[in-house]
Image (cartoon, helix red, strand yellow):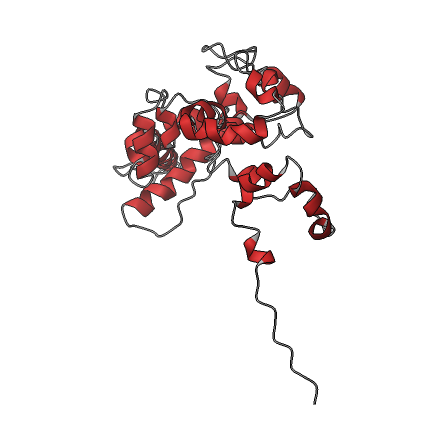
Length: 291
């Protein structure tokens, strides 16, 4: 009788792993590649897009005036990109599109996301302090904190010609026309002594005959007048192009009394000696006889 032995179950054959990466490794590899792409997209704009030479490809006149300004050692990004991680990230993403437009891959406009055309005060305050009451030249009195903190006036509202205009090569001072937007005598005082330490109303301007004699002084020495008034183009027109308050509807009947007095010379200052003839020497209109 043949021995019957108990047969043992066979052990499962061990799986033979195929050469290559496991699923986990492949996922990690894909994530790493994605991270590198994102980092590259953020780093490349920092190297290329943030350089002044790249900005100058489109903003040629602005780049040229920047090179001759007091800010020529300050990169565009230091003024035109607000501080903080969010703004930096937003701008880098915006430059990805800008670079693709520049090299012709896509089409778009000249705006870059996150880029501020007018610099924020925080960017200015990195180098400039607001506790300034007078300019280095010693003439202008400008309490900066009163303007920026109390009046909430942005630095760039006054210093709009600091870098990117021809005026940036001539002292970088705010234009007097810009000051007069507020210092008009109503919104803010407009006396010369409020803003200038060395400029007050000259004594000859206080003379009673000044209105009659000032044109002779201007004719003999225009630079004397230009020293204060030269910032206004055709500044004489600011007075001479406006009729005096006396020249109202009743003036035609009343002006003769002025002419017969010593004011006659004053009239000639504006109207000339022959102006009377334009009205008083006219041929009468022919009147048709009634039939």
